[in-house]
Image (cartoon, rainbow, N blue to C red; front, side, top):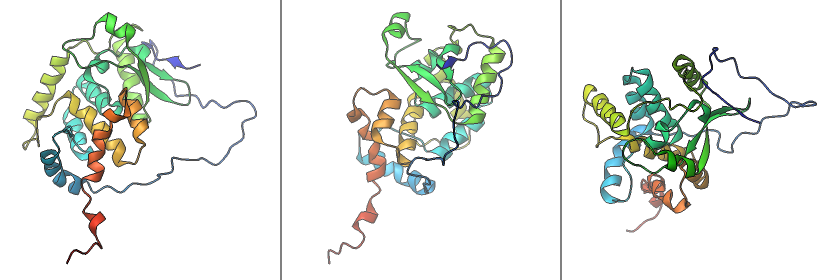
Length: 246
């Protein structure tokens, strides 16, 4: 059974290396795609034309741009909110509904259980929280895991207490403040949902299955997720190489 990470009155201990009795070491089998080479500059330069010609394509940031934003945020709570939206694809309402009990660590996987909530003003109601479906999002980054555990330990939250006592409007206002204090003009209006779109695009650029991405986003149908695949097919000039017209 997995265990939830609660308020943790004592500092979190290292994760155990659980192995069943009689376990024998075997060669690790990783995901078939072991390496992806991405030309970030090209993708950034191609994005304006993609967004101009495909009205249905959500506005998204790419990894170097997201990391620049994250590094500019120095407030621990606001940084953690941005990190969770970027690393889990969560809606801001889903992040604001997180409690210490939302985090789970079974010794093999660390992650967060999100209650699938549609975007709405303010915090989600207790009724919507009770009837909403849930999904588990693994978090593999060890440094990020440590920051989450340290935040919970320092906050001394109750098991069912929301760890971010702010509203969606406050998160949006903080993003606006962060953009204003940075040099240069953003490519478009950046909001909370931008991080969710960026998460989806980032996974697809790394060759992750569309069905898997759809499940992580909490979409009812994979058709809702297909819009993000435009980033893979739009820059397709190489498909015409070798095809002569004159």
